[in-house]
Structures are given as structure tokens and as C-alpha cells.
Amino acid sequence: MKSALRSCAVAAAHAILTLPLAADDWIPLFNGHDLSGWKVANGTASYTVEDGSICGATIAGSPNSFLATEKSYGDFILEFEVLMEKDQTFNSGVQFRSASDPAIINGRVHGYQCEIDPSPRGWSAGIYDEACRGWLYPVSLNPPALNAFKLGEWNRFRIEAIGHSMRTWLNDKPVAHLIDDLTKDGIIALQVHSIGNNKGEEGRKIKWRNLRIQTDNLKPAAVAAIPIRNLIPNDLSAAEREQGWKLLWDGKTSAGWRSATATTFPEKGWEMKDGVLTVHESGGNEAANGGDIVTTEQYSDFELLVDFRYTPGANSGIKYFVQPNLNKAGGSAIGTEFQILDDERHPDAKLGRDGNRTLGSLYDLIPAPKDKPKTKPGEWHTARIVVKNKHAEHWLDGKKLLEYERASDDFRKLVAESKYKGWAGFADWPKGHILLQDHGNTVSFRSIKLRQL
Image (cartoon, one colour):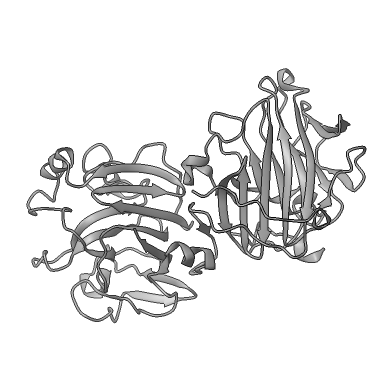
């Protein structure tokens, strides 16, 4: 199906509510006897039928192997069970809305994958983009679902792919909720992951059974109280609205934003174009700067998501609990800051203490860990800031970087040793503005979302 083709070059806690589906609504994908309706794509791993299940086995020297459906599927609800013994572990997954076409990366299977991860990381039922964008929904976003996969037992998986919404469950736990519009339909495929040339892992097995799909009269389960990751720029899905999210920037106008030093939006320095909000390079000329911008409203307990993209050598930040009227001597408004920085090129990365001015850090106070997700100039990344009561967290691309208690003695000690030591009650304010910083370098933002907690 042509609409199933993907080009990676172009692609830059409720329990499950089991739906009352009649037996006639389900279509079996496997007859329990042979592999009719399936075909091998890529690799040389073996796929056989054993005791009414499909059995995939690893083989040394083979790339990732896939047993794919001959048909393509668009909107569907898919259920299946997976068994992997404790002494047979290896990475695997189930592709959906995927493609294997000779015209694209030599026919390699690529697309969405519901992960099967028996490792200590425990990211089973997370959503990965095979041979393309990588992790789209790591299970680190939803810690209660970590390690839901049980070795030596049959595990129940469910995938709902309806419109732009893709959701997964594992053993009745909601795991992932992704909103994305790259691919509308494609094959379903069972993966036996490559083991390289490791002969010691050859012959390890994974089994699938009770594979069934529904394609008509689809009724999605209720929205679960788990994080939703929406990859469509400046989009707010119905599920996000149900969870209380709102867009802080509409993708087109300055509504809801103003200068940190005035009641109107800056007339220069900032640009809104093609759904991207950009502060431009000023070359160190303060007269050319537009200056920081802040939300017109103030917030106390909230969860904030911001996509950002920086240029080589750039410095910027996302501030919260901002008090624009405090810093009357000029400079950036005072507030706690999620640092945005090109760590490799900007000298600020080596200043401060212990790396507390690097990307993702609580600026000049708490450093981001060295094993944080890697970032590069020109790529989009997602900052997540969570504040509830006095507890605050910084996240980057689905990984928690740091957390702290704003009113604690430890935090006050950090403030006393920082550039903020002269500001009485720093970060202990009950509410404040959200700020995007103009530090004189080109940095872009989009998909700015907030929900009050």
C-alpha cells in the first residue's frame, strides 16, 4: 500500500478497560498450524510453529529478522501473547504500521515497534521507531510500567492504533501513549533481533500466540493517567485536553506572551514562522535584542513541556517562577532555570560548579547528570519541568535529570553558594511566570504545553 511507505530521510494509572468485543469482531492473524499469511523479511532467523505458537530463534551473523503479515493495516486494535524463558533472553518487538519496500533503505523493515525488552531496563511495550527515529516513547516516561514483562510467563500485549493515536498495554498495565502522524498504515511483523556474531546466544527463542486483530467498529479504551507524548508540532489531542493540557503558544501569534520588561510582545528579535518561535542571534548587540519573553499568566503547581532546538554555540533557557519586577538593574528576569546550552561549544558549560550550567541543569544550582540524553545543534529535543507543592523535577527527552525541594535546607544552601544568593526568598515564591530567554543566540521553540496540577 503506497500510504504505508515511509522515508526516514523526510522524517526528521488506570488499568486497561477490556472492551466488550464479540468473537466475530476479532480476526485471527495466526491459525495455530502454519505460517499462512506471513512472510520473512530481512535476516535469516528461523520462524517455526511449535505447540500452537509462532517460535522465532536467533542465529549468529544475521541482521534483525522479521516475520511480516502479507497484508497492511491502518486503524486497528491488536492483541497477542509473548513468552520468553529466563535463560533465553534477547531483545525483540512487534512492528506495526511499518514498511518493507525495495525502494526504501534496501527493503529494510522500518517503522513503529512495540518493544519487547527483557533487560533490567524494562522498556517492554514502549514505542520505538525501527531503523528511523529511534525511541519515540521510552518507558522511562511512565515509571509504574517499568519491568511489567515477566520472564518465563505468557505476557499479554495490546496495541491500539487509531488515527494519530498509538497506545500500548502490557499485562493489563497502560504503558505508552504516542500521538504521531508519520505513517497511517503498514505491515505487522514479529522481530528476532540480531545477536551479531555471538555464537553463545544462537538458538534463543521467543514465542507468540493468540495473535488477533480488530479493524472495524473500533472502540478505544478510556484515556489512562499516563504521560502522552505528542510528536505533531503545536498540536493538542483530545486525550491531552482530557488530561488538562493547554497550549501556551498557539503556533502562530504572540497571544499569551509579552516582553519580560513591557506589557507588549517585543517588536524585534523574535520571529513566529511555520509553527516555530525563534529568538535570533544579536551578535552581542543588546540594542538588537528583543529580550526575554514571559507568559502573561502566572503558575504555581504545573507540568510544562517545551520542544527546543539550539544552534552551534548557543545559550538560552526556560525559566519558571519568574519575577520580572525584581531585577530592576537590567539583565534576565529572576527565576529558576532549565538551562539550554551547547555544552561542547559554549564556555558556560565549564563555569559554575560541577557542571551546573550545562544543558538540563537547574542553572547555577544543580548539575544535570553526565549520562543525560545526547543532544546536537539543529535537532529538536523536549524539556519537561514538573512542579508540585515544593517538589520540582527536570526531564530531557523522557529521562529524569534531577529533582529538588524548593524550601529545603539543602536547596537554600545551594542558593547561598550561587549567583542568586542576593535575592531573598529565591524560588520560594508561590507562583510566577514562564520565561523563554533571549541570550543573544538563535534558539527555537515549539509545542509549548502546560497543565496545572
